[in-house]
Image 1 (cartoon, rainbow, N blue to C red):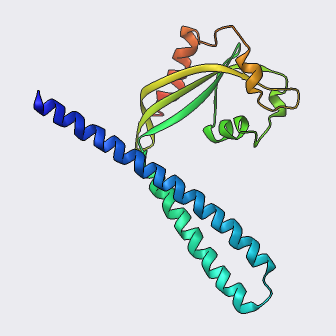
Image 2 (cartoon, one colour):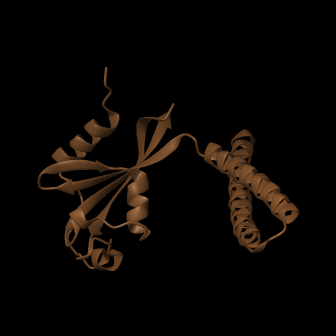
Image 3 (cartoon, helix red, strand yellow):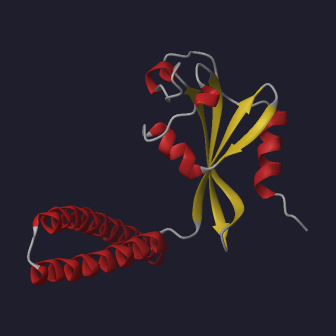
Length: 182
């Protein structure tokens, strides 16, 4: 019993340490981003050549630090990835995760989907060598686009119908995600 408790404490400490490191890295990235913006503004205002060189050098160092912290942050969770799929009457279509993030964050619009509503499957998957291996979690929701092609999260929340996939759609997602091209 004591051995089990020790393992649980060790796992909890490891998860706690990982969470602390993630928070430190996110904080460092945020500060470096703000510092980079400030130095860029100062660089635009400087006139003397020696001052410009000093700021250029500092910006180069900040850029290098940002890349290093981004690399470290990515390496903390290297074995999981999110995949999104749009479910329609015509079938299942994969959507690039980066595109999905841009759409829901308001950074992008899709005139192709303007005025339409879809069911969205969001699968969180364990990976090995960046290849999907095992489903960890799956969520389903509505993805509603306004007449301009922007994602309307408030409209999606008002839909009372279930966004769950049919068995056939679930199998299509599995096939798209886990099939190998051998």
